[in-house]
Amino acid sequence: MQHGQPADYVAFSLEPDLTRLVPKFGRCRAGTAGPRRDWCPSPVVVIVVRKGNPKKITGWDDLAKSGVKIVTPDPGSSGSAKWNILAAYTHVLARGGTDAEAGDLSEEVLLQRR
Image 1: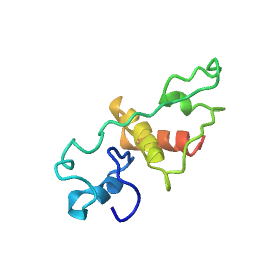
Image 2: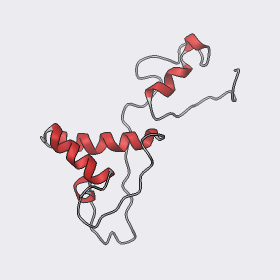
Image 3: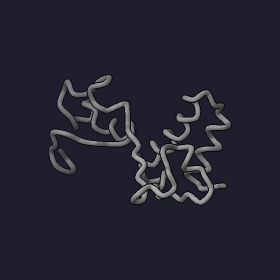
């Protein structure tokens, strides 16, 4: 490799980062790229609460309640933060909500607009 160190496993949050390693650029072994062989399409978002969970938070809707504050990375520089936005958004869609409702929840939770 020109930069960095050889690796058997690489973890990226977003597809554009992964595409830097495709074989046409000579950055990974032949046969390792391809659909569902080079990345995990089901990221997991974990919600961590204070000891004893005093606000009784059990999911995304609870994070939008008044008085609840969150800590999350900046989506401008973190792939994980982008997944957080998508998770909040799709949570609303999965329960039958509209795009507008999903956008509202995302803003309430992640931008703490209440």
